[in-house]
Length: 406
Ligand SMILES: [Zn+2]
Image (cartoon, rainbow, N blue to C red):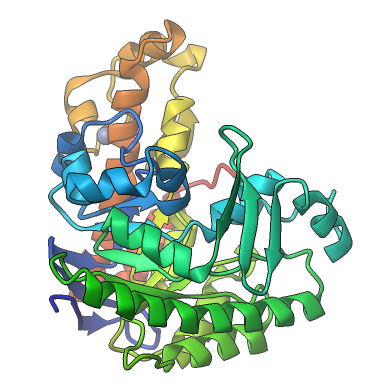
């Protein structure tokens, strides 16, 4: 086995800490932002560029890779990292989120507070069109060709073993803030039972595929906005053992009221073992990253930096702006004069403005390099601030300048 986590230093009077995750493909110094490469590519960017800008790992998606090209292809290629020419650590999420969310048209966790949905019935009714959850698993329709598929905890483990990432996640049920309390309780129990099945299948697969590098399995904590459910999930999965193994780390997922993000992470963290890493799923905006780090999350992933980049929205220390706007046509300064990324060292806002207006492919590429660097570097600076003992000063200084554009 070559997976471990070591806590290095802590934020005084908070749950946050710095540390090092060790995987068969190298170390991840935490806290760290993990760029998303959904289909085994960080969209629009070369792996070398993602490596050069300081990313320590990438996270791909089991649902998308299962549908296309199929996990057998990744297995035959020698695993995700080899397939995509990425030598550093890799993650895959379980596919649970996409199986359920793509079916009802949800884009991301925090969007799940739309006014159109307000009861389990409505959600169930909508869900029937593409995804149906039962106690054994989820039946869903491919968003690519409409074909029917079924994911269970066992299938998710098999798919993620074939994909071969260093860190994989247990299969969980996604709920929304609109589900009733009763449904949240039932769902949490289903996710708990699925977690046991994931441990059992993971153990079986690890033994039968011992020629492959060790894969760490993270349990996923749900519980929506309820303190007792969040704490219960953390206690249940935090100390769960089955087939003689326990989870190597934890993902904090599901529906989150963003204004309570730090509090919710704190509830889970207080119940979890200190010596295992915690990944906050789908979170990547600066203020949320500060809240997550302060409250004890170690790693993060989010499509926002790459997705925003492709629409010409770029980050700078005062907030996010749209570089295709007419005021940047003759602005020959870099996107961010403080930034050390390849894009900011070599290109101007005027050039990016031109590329986006002319619909040139290089526009999204250069904006992606900058945005991913900005967020990776922000979390790296949080890590250095924790180790220097001035996390709160850094937080105040950064957020004092940064205007949230949400
Ligand atoms: Zn830059």
